Amino acid sequence: MLTSQRKQLICEKLAAEGQVLSKDLSAWFEVSEDTIRRDLRELAAEGHLQRVHGGALPSSSATATFSERKSLKMDAKQRVARKGVELISSGQVVIIDGGTTTSELITRLPADLRITVVTHSPSIALGLVDHPTIEVILIGGRLYKHSIVAVGATAIESIGNIHADLFFMGVTGIHPEAGLTTGDYEEACIKRAFSGRAAETVVLASPEKINTASPFVIGSLSLINTLVVEEGADEAWIRAVEEQGVSVVKA
Image 1 (tube, rainbow, N blue to C red):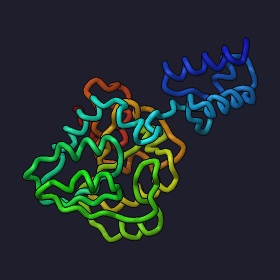
Image 2 (image 1 turned 180 degrees about the vertical axis):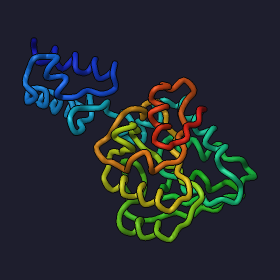
Image 3 (image 1 turned 120 degrees about the vertical axis):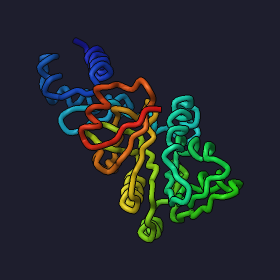
């Protein structure tokens, strides 16, 4: 079998099963694990999958640039954002992460909602400038241009002075085994820091993030309390998430 054919079959198996293991692929194709690892390395370099210990997971498309992600799965993002608004109560301190789904969230906040929003995203802060009853606290630091958010030591230090009720965490991948992941190391650090300062952490998960992984781990699913997904999300996957103590809400 040609290498290109084997790679195509690996991709098809990954799409069908949501995960592949090097040992199983080696037996299936009757080739060495070294050969399979080389195939997986090359497929990962081409952006077709995310390598993990012992095999590979689907690669998240949510690691594209902010402008590219703005038009990705917009209907789904709008639905989960509307459901996310229902989790917010007047008087709360709410941390809102940067991202295209959280950008949809803030457009749906009621005009009479009185909360304090803490964010490290200039885009989120500017999106709330005209809201009459929301106070905004903007965390500063080095601007990570890919996601248009502040990162670094200054941001981490500021986050340590917050006690929040809710944190809407943005992720690029969420998987029962690989956990919560994102495409940048410093972003992962910021997200962990925010989660540690909030009573509850919520993830609004549009379909391209489900059962996928990115290179940098934010943490296990135990970091979050609530996951908002679209109606119709895979029930087996939902059960696997709920078994880890996460409440799943359908939009």
